[in-house]
Length: 432
Image (cartoon, rainbow, N blue to C red; front, side, top):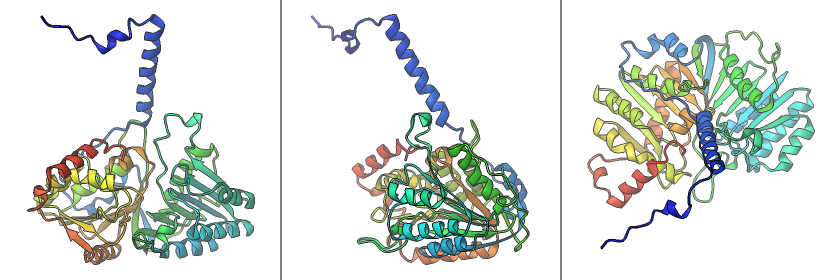
C-alpha cells in the first residue's frame, strides 16, 4: 500500500477570486518591470567584406552616430587623469558638464570638488551628474558643498518610488565636457584608488581620451540625454552647443544610444568591430564576461586568421572576483578558437578599450558584458587614427609584461569544483 504525498500547494487551499486577481496583478507587474529594463540583443555573424577604416560611415550610422572629421585625440593614463580634469576645468569660460559613476570622499574627490567650486566662482555654469548607487561614497556634506557653491548637482536613478523598475539601470558613463568644445571620456572614476597606491595593490590602471573638435557635440548630447532623464531640465544654447571648428584631422564617432526594444549602440559597435577585423584585435577590459554569441564571434575571428588577444585583471587583482570567475566560463570556447588571454597581475586593469587592425579603436566606459551592453547607460568613442591605435597597442604590449597568459593545454585540467563554480556564477551573467 502506498501513501500519497500531499502537494505543498494543498496546505494553501483554494484561492479566492481576490487572491487570484492579486497574484495575476503581481505577475503582470513583474513582466512590466522586466520589459522596462530588457533590451534586444544583437548578434553579428557575418564577416564584413571591407576593412574597418573603409567603412567608418557605415559603422557610425549603424550605431546611431555621425562620423566627424577634424578632431584631435590624445590618451590620458592612470593618475594623470586628475591633472587633466582640473586643468580642463580651469580653462572653462562658459560651462562645465561632469558625469561619473564611482565617486567617493578622499583626496581625489577634494581636488575635483575644489576645481568645480572655483569654476562656479568664475561665473561658469557647472552641471554634475553622478550615479546614485556608484556615488554612495560621496557624503551628503560633499554634495551640499557643491550645491551651496552654486553647482547643479544631481544623482541618477536615486532609490525613490518614481524610479521603481529602473533601479537596476545605472549611469556608468564617465564624461567631462568643457564649453562644448573639449571632452574627456573613458574609464576613470573619482576615488583615491585611481590616484594613489593602496595597501595591497597599486593604483588602478586606466585610460581615458582627451578630445577636441566637432565630435564633442555628440558627447555633449550624450550628457544631455541622462541629464534630462535625471532632472527634467534642458539646456539648448550656443554656449553649450557651439559651432565647433576643426582642431585636427582625426575621424571620430560616438556610440551611446540605447533605444527601447533595440540593441544598444555600444553593443552593436563592439559586435561590428569584431566582424570587421582582418588582422588583429586587442581588448583590455576589467569585467570581461562575454555572452555565447560574443565569445563565438571572437573565436571565429581567431579561426579565420585574426590575431585576437584579450587582457583582463587576474583573480588576485580584481575588485569583483565573482565577475572574473563567471567570465572564465567562456574561456574554453575562446581558447579552442585560438584566442590568447592574458591576466594582469599588478592591480585592477580598468581600461575599456578595443582596437582593430591597427587603424581603429574604441575607448569609453563600457565593460565587455551584458550589464554594460544591455542595461547600463554607457558611451564608447570610435577613433580612426593609426597613431592612437599604435599607442594603445604599445600599452597592451607593455602591460603584457605584467601578465600571465592562460595556457590552453592546462586550462581544461582545472579542478572540477573550480569549473563548476565558474559555470554556476555564469548563470547570473546578465546582472553582473
